[in-house]
Length: 49
Image (cartoon, rainbow, N blue to C red; front, side):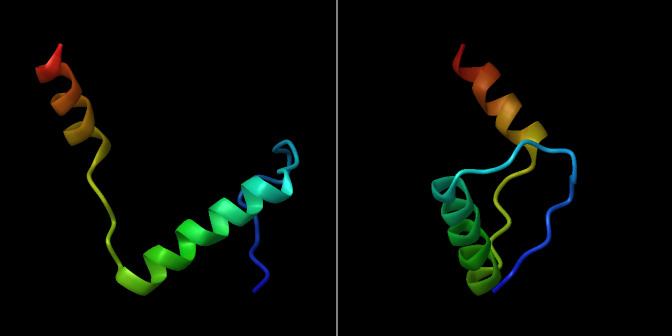
């Protein structure tokens, strides 16, 4: 499956980076697990400090 990039001026990705991004997107499309909001992650990290 060919995927479009959002930033045309971004540096080129290595084949390994492309593979990892595709793997993560495929997992998301399969499970629809979005993860946590950034604010939740930051708050959790601050609690540990």
